[in-house]
Length: 599
Image (cartoon, rainbow, N blue to C red; front, side, top):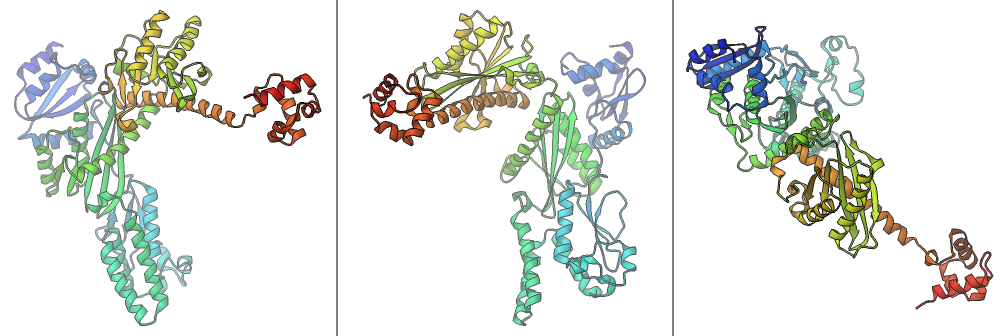
């Protein structure tokens, strides 16, 4: 710590405000807020600050500037404004909403059109629905609106110059207001119905259309009644396909999933009872999950109008400043809800599952060059894993027992190093003896070849670990990591546990990525073992009684089956009959007869 920083820390104020860390080139590298600037800034330079991010940040700090504010809410506003302006290296940065698509209805025209829209400029009379997170969702909704309500999609110039209806009228997707096939009042009713549909007021529409259909039917106007019936069916199909979260009019559900220094944040949105999908944000940052999500939410809602309710992760502790700022900025009271009770708990679980799965994909892509990178950091052993071997035993009710040993390098599975072992000599259902046999066979050979891996993974529990330790002692193998993946309660993957060489449960010390990697390796070993075991069982089903007779190969077996028309004919034949077959002498015929009729 240089003398300049020491002087600043000694004299810094205890009032609320924001602080800016600058590097030796006077570039701002971090901006933060604090209720007490002295306590917050000093904490970065204390011995208790052990995180990697903090250490790297502090190494580059050459100067500190502060701005005092009236309260924490004002500091929050200023922090976000400055982060957007200076884009500091160590702050998380969000993209804006300009790229997200909307559905636009141009109410400024006498005959409004419906369009796909991106961008910022918005007419005062125009109506926007969104933002949607998926383009295909927007196009699907546009298609439905045109199909059900027959709203025009052409631009105003094209509309003004039409002399006759276009193809959209021909295929029954527009009522051709351009050539007065429909008057303005009827068209306005269609537009209003389309607006109700986009606002999720489907129950109102169904009731209204049902009355109209009943009236048309009573007037014997069946053709128009059938058109209304088709509209009702289309609207019902939307209602039936809705997710349970759609029962809320306006709500956001924010989830975060982290592994090592990778963080995935999703914002799942429902507006006007319509599920708009989710916006995705990925960060690589050494900061804590709590700080990441708090910083994200404060930045996100300065650019995005908040809904009535926001379901947030329970790792967030400071809610009041954010509530106050949102109220001042938007003049609405937004409820910030923890997912601790139903129905929010159930919704949050569904959304969190999506985020967890997305994190797996993100991390697997980032760590493709070394799949063990994250696991090495979690385990914190001196040995760095470059190769791993996994053992599994498979059998069908004790029979056709087979073992497998599969190999993973830093680049993924290495199938040249896969091995299967037939375990006919092992007592039925003795998994421990089978595991010991396979471990001994494979590890002894690898030791001779001087190609032992750094990690052994077992499919099993304490019993399998005991067998592995005994084998390692017998073969005098040391400096190797031993882990076991134990199947969870009710065999659910989410309940799997990981045990170390001392049978200690280390599951909670592993990141999501590391746990998933070990499960993936275990599952691959199981797949390889069970595939071999099934192939072996299948082969036995098609074996003939002739296959085990000494002196009978494929050629002689085929000759016997051809001559007698099948195995039943061979069983009924005498020694003399067998001797008449090409390639079968009297001595061999006698052997075949005795073998087939032995008690």
